[in-house]
Every structure is written in structure tokens, then in C-alpha cells.
Image (tube, rainbow, N blue to C red):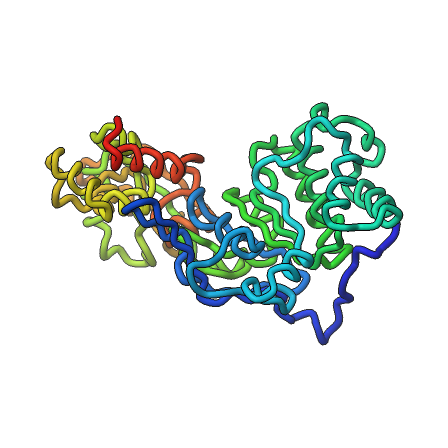
Length: 405
């Protein structure tokens, strides 16, 4: 196989160089009187040759950040550089140095695999002779050479994803951006895609930046993980570093209702050996037709409260002075307790509940996972987020602001 794809030899001198530098990046979207700050003054760097992952729920700012780095969107403030090229001052050079695999499918279903790649090569101005060699090389890398003459509409989801990765590599980029690379795929296909991503990174020293809301994906692939939520960076580190933030074990308790949970929380506040108690945020049904039947994120609620019509609608429903963040914590039925030697302390903790007639529905002891880390810093689970939460919220708010139903 031709190894022309290898763009930079890793040596002791360059292995720690940052290929991406992001400084104070902010992106605000404005829709009439509604302002949404999708990315909030974030700064980070990505090292040459690493797999760097953004982990967070839908609407956290992952895709917006990727779109800014790939020059699809302009930042409201701040800037970034990729391979030494500023995204604002030299966007053409940035585009030449990156490959992108979007979250949504963007292949031409009525073309073959080879024709899709050939079209992409033409758009990038790759000479025909060179294009043929590169197309064959990429098809071999993603194990699709034997299927290159088949139409994409006959491909499986995993095959299409692999072809999109091949297309993103066709012009020999320094960095490859993967936006939710395995979303919607079955577990076996997801692991197959992971294998290809690892191979590209290891064999060709390509820097890979991916977004995901899958904990296992971030754990399996990423050298470093950036936890992002509500447009803000919560924490950056290796998987092990992040998990070590939670000392000891994680004891997860579920109660019959929020009253029992809050009563129990007060009883164990001074229990020896507890490092932290975190309530897992619940989803909350809002009796406001058209705004949101289910508001599962803090940011969604804050958008309502920051909008004058949203405030008026809350007032109409007797909720003028409501603190939505506190209400969601108050309605929680699950808590995570970080403590040392959990198995030794469980009998005493159960006894406290029994003595106060508090029923614990379920109890789990485990070593900290990335999900526990996310809960620790945000108070909620990634899987609680609706895929269309942000879009739905914006659409419904716009309808209300225009006087629709």
C-alpha cells in the first residue's frame, strides 16, 4: 500500500506540538429576540497525532465547535488555528488541511463508491491520474475496494460511514473531523468503525477530532476527552484522569420519590467517608403547551426564562418566580454518592434509610465511569437528552413569539 497519506513523521521533537489551538471561542445565534450562546468562550489545544474527543449531549456545542474549526461557521468572538493557519485570516489553507465527516449522510446515493470519491477529488482539484491512485488507496484502507462499483443506496449504514471517512481522507488532510461517527449504527458496526479510526490514527499519524455522546466510544478511542455541556468546557483529560477525579467508588441509589431522596440526603450529609453527593437531574414536564412538553436540559429552561414572551407564559401558568434548575433537582429520584470502600459502608447507609422508613428501589456499587464523571460535573445523564431537543425548542419558541399555536 502507498503510504503517501502519512503527512508527518512522529519524532521526539514534534510529538508534543499542538496542531490545533483554540482561544476564547464564542458563538451566539440570534433569532429575533431569542439569543442562544451555543459556544461560550472555550479554549483548548489538540496535539499532533492524537485522537481528541468532545463528549457531551446533543445541543452541548460539539458540532458548532467543529463547524467553526472547519470554517463553515464564523465565531462571534475568539479564534483558532489549525496547522498554523488562522481560521479567520487563512480559511482556504485551513480547509486544505482538514477532512470532514459530517453527522448526517452526505453521499450521492445514485453513484457508486468510486464515483462518489472521484467527484470529491474533482471538487478538490486533484488531477485525474493522481485521483485514481488515491481513490484506490482510500478504498483499500476502509475495506471497500471489492465493493467500489456498487451503488451507495445498496450499502449498509456501516459501509456508507466508512466511505465517508475515505472521502474525508482523499486530499491527504492533516486533521480529520468526525461528527458523531457511529450514530445510528448497531454495536458490531460501531466497533468496526472504531477499528478503522484507530488504524488511521496509528498507521498514518492523522490527528482525529471527533464528537460523540457515547461514553464507550470516547473511552475506547480518545487519547484525551473534552467534556462539554451548555457550550462550556467542563473538564479535559485522559479517560483515567477524569475517572480519578471521583475518588473511591460510586454508589448509585434510586428512591421511590423525590421526597424520600431529599430526606435521605439530609440524613447522610455528615456520614464519614463520603466525598460527594450528586442528585441526577430528572426530566420535567412543563404545563405550557407549545413551548416544550418535556424540558430535559438546563439550557432549554434558561432560554425560556431569558425570553420576555417565555416569562409571560410562565407567569400565566402561575410560575412567575419559579427556579427551574432547583425544581429539577427537587424532583430527582436518583443520587450518586462518591465514597471510599463503598461495600463496607453500604450496610450502615441502608440502616439509616430503614430507620427513617425510606425505601431504596435500587442500589449499585461500581468503579467510576465516564458517565459518573459527567453526572458529577453536570448533575445529569447524557442519555436523558432528546436528539432534537435544541431544534424543537427553537422552533416552538419561534412559533410562540410569532403568535402561533
